[in-house]
Length: 577
Ligand code: PRP
Image (cartoon, rainbow, N blue to C red; front, top):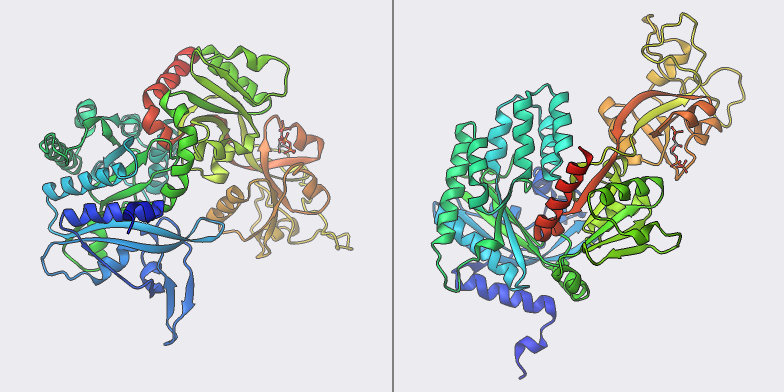
């Protein structure tokens, strides 16, 4: 027979190598059914990256699911007998990417039992060696949930507030963190600590001093001591085949996970030229507690699907990544021109871009910067997919699509608001006229009466009566509000927090036309000067969010090119001040 390595497909070869690696370290293969009771996932939704689950009714009438996750099944069946279990698996899982369900191959490793720092070091080494079976250019980022949960204990936050803060930390979004802290009434000192934590990126030696300064309570100190001990364990592995190159491991506190499941170290792996993380893991003792078990647990999963597709693409873009050039997606139009001026002022000009032409790609070989003109709403896609390392995107687009990117700087241009607006001259909160407000309702397309429809009216801000006026009763009524918008996710989130039922009408432009022609009751849209609303007899009644252009970065690009990206950010900030 030919060499088995020549016969295997690329993903099969990877599995073969990973299995050999884990077996060598004494891990045994764990095999399981692809079906589980749905209840297991319904009770632990926050543990999984995607909430959608494929279900079917089993023969006994029980609701079953096609397994979206392997760890939960392992934890459910593991005996709490004090014995250390070292397992690995290679199984298909079934997850939705938000559009459709996909069957994905996952290889992973779990340790359940007494977890000491030596074992944690072993798991980290295996995670890094797993990346090295794919490419010699890989990096493993490590964080510790103890820092975050210790810091968040410092102020009394609701669960919602915590998750908003954690989301900003995962984006390295310092302006967002400062805004949230101001909204929640936190001290400036606390706000700066959070911002500093989100920015930490570097070797343990580089960041140790800053980490010590940030530690303000026992939980954070314990996390620091554990990271320090782990660092020593990894260093002590010497220079043999199982040693790690210190430059390939870094500490980064924007690596976060669900605080109710993960309690200790967490980590993520990236491979150069692949746009998203290919490995994710951590210490998840809290999950064991939820199952009433005393053991500790640590593990990771390798996302093989991403690897086999992207590995082929990697060949095409390897030359660009080798030279460490930076690709920047700029939004076509006035905002993009202003954004380009910011880069030019910071020393990253590319004169050709200003020439009259229909070209879309411009390169300055001297600075190693390549600019693309991209449709504004597509910038985040180019960056998330790693075609662009950096991009300039409006906060409206980031709020609407929640791309998995870093939000490095608020560029302070393209300022506007996302607001709810209605027909008519609605009194704003500071409108003190005694004139009765005109009814705000608009007729439904088939409304033949002259009476305002109760469903379509909006509340008036300084109405003092207890009884809702006929004009107001509609807004208070159980009828869904018809909302026309380019931003369905933002609108849904806004009305969900108000407990209002809505009917979204997704439009692509000229949103102000919708209430004018009776298609909707309100709009959720961008208001910049307010001129479009004014000229169409409309007025804003609620502001949802302030918008401006942000510098965003692909997370894998930041991992491999962070020195250049940090330099660009520094120069931009310097040239603005
Ligand atoms: C945006 C927005 C409003 C208008 C607001 O539209 O959707 O219609 O600008 O600006 P103003 O407050 O300064 O009047 P855009 O120009 O993007 O065109 P669109 O209607 O096709 O989306």
